[in-house]
Image 1 (cartoon, rainbow, N blue to C red):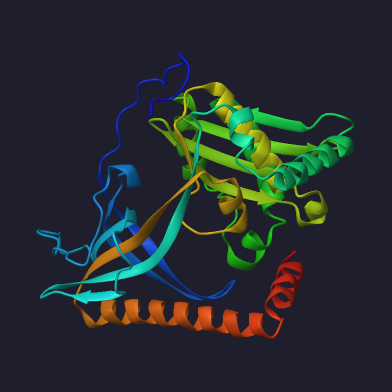
Image 2: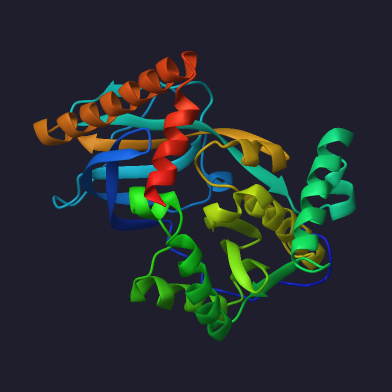
Length: 326
């Protein structure tokens, strides 16, 4: 479906379909990272809407440079649940993760969109929005940042929020601060392909969301909130306002929540596509061992989480870890 409105996106060079880069296989038990394995891969950079659907059959990648460990395709649609490992003569396929990729249709009006929620959920969301508005003195203080100069302002404030999150303190996965990240973001802002949003309470930033865009798709890239303000549900409130603003622009087709399933994504999403992150790696002892360890860590983490949940300890331990990190 074409985006609403007459506003057109600026013309930008189409990124290459495949890029060579270093990626990381994180070995983690729940929120605790125990090791990280570096792989050099040729990654398919196309959006999931441009990718073919993967099935049980697969082809070994031809003609890879010797310096590469293999290929990686993120968020590839799948026709059925795939086996974790499949073996070829020179390569093996490792399906690192399978998940429902959640999206939001941005072509509709916001008034039409909110009616996807039940009346009870709408009332809950509006109550949270009003509570934040009261804390802000009557009107929600949501600020938007688009230009390269505005991004610098956004980055300083968002980093302060990110530093307080458990993702940054416990996992080292907060908002990046490296100069390369800043320069890349500013280049996207110069092409009008970046949106930064901050929620303030009494002039203090309490939640941030940074989105980048490609064609008519907006990506949910970096998000965080100050745990001291969790009682206000600042992340939920900010996303509510961001969706209203994106829909009002009339130029976007979709918000892509990217990989990973979460309750707030399921709540706000209008569609979901079954996807997988798929490696095709050389059949060397190092790479086979790395994939096996990554798979084992995932199984142990899932099993441990299920066991703790069954005895009512999972949420308590998660809260304790996040509180200790903050």
